[in-house]
Length: 146
Image 1 (tube, one colour):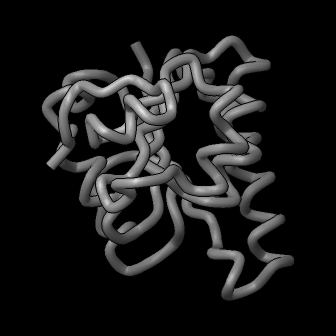
Image 2 (cartoon, helix red, strand yellow; image 1 turned 45 degrees about the vertical axis):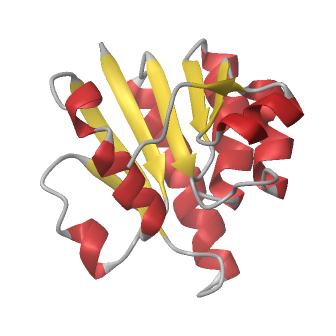
């Protein structure tokens, strides 16, 4: 099984690393924003320019990452949140037949993000990390990542 791991470079990456026991034994690669921290990841990775730094570079690197994902053909996409990139990656992966899993950040206790609302229809599995939030929006809860 091949797994694509999508997350931003800060707390979302930390949450993804909290799931390492679940994905580390499989063939995997990261899709994440370019930073000193993400460049030091010891695995295959596709780095995307953050849109706040440069919108044109973000678009170019996003399309390069989409092309790489198309070539890699992952069986599963797991995201702990990456904002704009999720909005493109989830529908793209679903069209390719990839099973998609979105894990909303533990920082969101009472509501889900705008990104999560947009990609929820494209997620095969949509998880939140607070039981009360799961009940209020009809999502799945299986505990926290951290």
